[in-house]
Amino acid sequence: MVEVKNILCAVDFSEISPRVASYAQSLAQGLDANVYVLHVAPSIDQYAYLRIPPTDFQEHVNEAIVDAENSMETFVQENFDIEKVTGKVLSGYAVDVILDFVKLENIDLIVIGTHGRSGLDRVLFGSVAEKVVKSSKVPVITIRPEKKS
Image 1: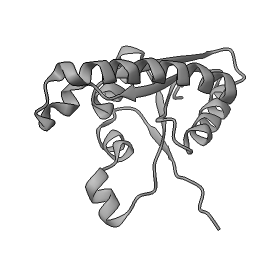
Image 2: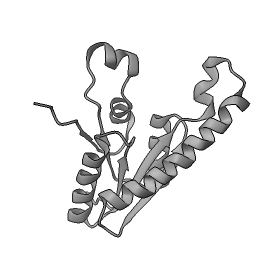
Image 3: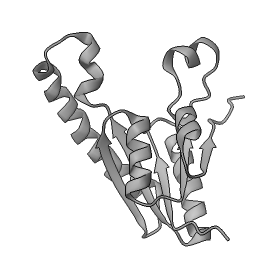
Image 4: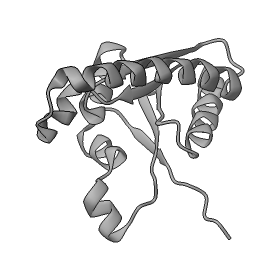
């Protein structure tokens, strides 16, 4: 039987993130598993194509990381009522950071939200969730946004 002891709850603090957290918490309670809530902030490398000196962006990137850490603390307090939960903010290309974190923390299952984009939006913005699903060596549960009536 497969044993799930560590669940990764990947969030971007968008409106779907609380729903992703709810699924991760329910699974963790049923499986007596740990939850790692991960947010990936962009790194300075992701702005290289703009050809602006890195020093101009470094302060903004640092501020974004500090803001994300504060948001993570609040997010965990508001969305989890289990003890075995750890919030983490890392920086880099989201797909790579998520997959590296899976290896580092021996994650058994990933819960991640999608934005439900289609057509041109999907082509332009891509999908972190889709890339994680295609590349992950562990199972991935994707949570779609609720359809508005």
